Image (cartoon, rainbow, N blue to C red):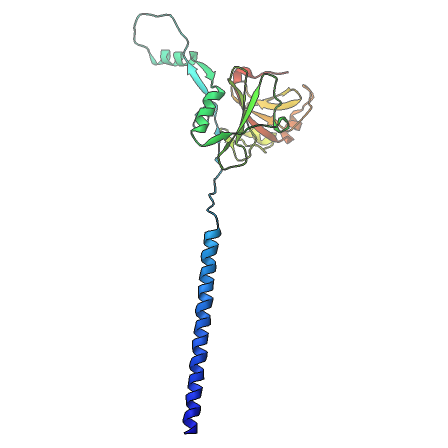
Length: 245
């Protein structure tokens, strides 16, 4: 009889301990689940916006046109069929006109780009002239600017400045390359010094490069020195406005 009572007491104690252990496990699991759920609710939804890669061409950047062709007006002649050579000659006579800042602004707004409120003068790769204004553009959600657009007092775009090393031009040149590397890609380039800054350019191209040298004088810059300079900016500028000073 005493043995039965002892066995019964032991069985009851085991049941109590097992039940307590299960309750603790359930409590731990519930607490852990609630914690994860709370963390998931507390974490805000974040959207990562990737920076675009811009490719600068002679007359466009990506799909944004930078020039427009306007055929010259000519005297009316009797109707006649034109030969392929005559068509090519007509195309050659077409004048190119630089797009306006207003046009670029409209096109960029359509692809989710926004203009910065202000651009600090000290951040400019090329100092502004008195009649010029500058606007920096960046993709919405991306803090780093993509490029700067400099326009004249009449609203026409004068030049566009790319300093971001992610961007590239049609000749595979990027900011950060040395003059020697650039010349391998574009053998026809020559240099000029304007307002103390060194540029590599081609008379037949709208794309030029600002090099790292400062306070230079025309005639004092050797080719070997330019070879060691780095490209600090890729610049689009209508070739009609390439001038030396």
